[in-house]
Image 1 (cartoon, rainbow, N blue to C red):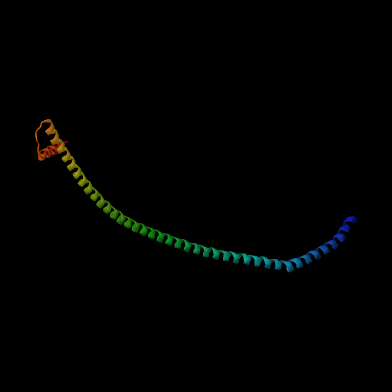
Image 2: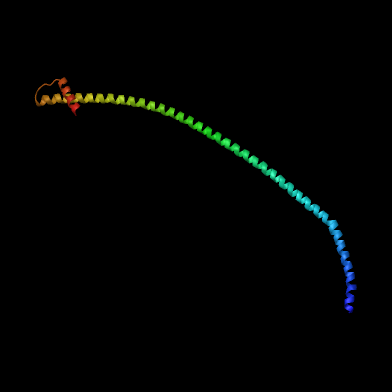
Length: 164
């Protein structure tokens, strides 16, 4: 068959050029471009690794700074609470002193007012007794015509007021 004999001659030249093209591609891409790509990939990997290491160091520094800040805030809060407690205690003592002073002043005014009221009460009772004694003397004189002394009338009024 002539067609089969023709296949070897036709494909021999195609196979030759196929080998030549693949050889060129191998040497151009494999030996020329691939090392540059590998260098770029390695450089990128190294850059990513260094960026990650730097980020890790920055995170550690930030954590340390945050911890220091939290500790300072806790110390400041404790100091503020202590100062507040001291101020509260001082204010309580001062208030107690003012209350005691005001209480003493009020007690003195109360005692003075009570003394004044007792004096006025005694004076009013004395006036009432005198008026009642005079009225009793006058009534006894009008009703019975007897003359009662002022001392006897006063004694009778005191006895009546003591029982009432």
